[in-house]
Length: 436
Image (cartoon, helix red, strand yellow):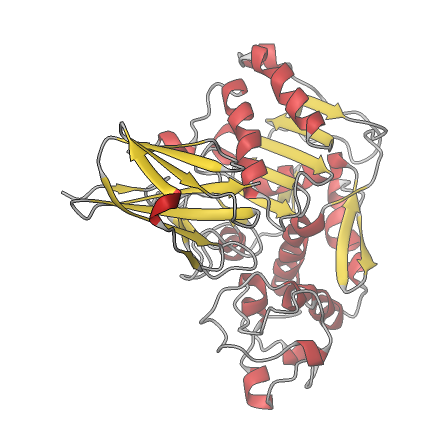
């Protein structure tokens, strides 16, 4: 029987609805706490976690359990009142507001985007333009050319593929959802958010226009409040902000077949493959193998993380500066969870579920040479970047001895790579590494 190395086998869909019994007051700094010791967590893992976070330019870090604060740490001159950018993690708020607007009868996600933006919002023909829907904007399947990811001017929005046939992390169609909401509601984006989100949850944030982008800013506790709202099925302390269960479930489940790890502007762990921003190559396995498979995440540039673990009623927040320049820094995210999982003793990382690793790759990240240990003889080694481009390896750059393969990668540009190995029997093994 052929053996394939996958970070995770396909898992059942999880419903993102927990029972939160505590919600902090809407105003003031009061927020109940519970200690890691009371939870029986492995507290000896707290110091290395905090040291790592500080070294990686973290500004704020929070863990909530059942709505109560377990850990709350700020670094440098940041405190609980400091407004911090969510970057693309703010897409989660936009997705929620679209659902609220639909429930209010202001729009339908199957409507053409041009119904709300008018004709000529792209450079497409009228027929091509009218085929793009709000659903396509929510799922990153507009088919527009993402070479200019942020520009929302019509001349930047060019046809590349039919809507729904190509997944690409394209910020411009997402950003234009703000205009869809505004034109559908007759209100400014922040006014609509305040009336339908902020006053009910105390989130205390706002969208700020930066260039082409609408970037959400709030204190870290504001992001934590968003996490509680989502864990509780769109209801805050008895007040339902979004009662459309169909839309709510679609937010945090696979929204299309092209990228299983993407819902409505949320990232989904524990899927069988994923595509990264800027690429078209589907990587096998889970986004964050060291994190729970059920994790649902809002992820933003420079490592803004809103993590939800429904079965444990956990919200994990990280906000701060850049550990790297990735739009979706999955390696940093996974490394953070390699320290978090031993602390939160009851969670099981995705890489321990139905996964027997047949090869061992190290160091990772790598600078000059990567070593692969295997119990079988390898016949072929292939390396791809996130665009799916193949980097062929000349034989002098690949040596094997004692069950180990050493590969010089010093000439590769920095970035994330997929490595594929095939043995003499034709079995295929996949892993990934980061080139510094």
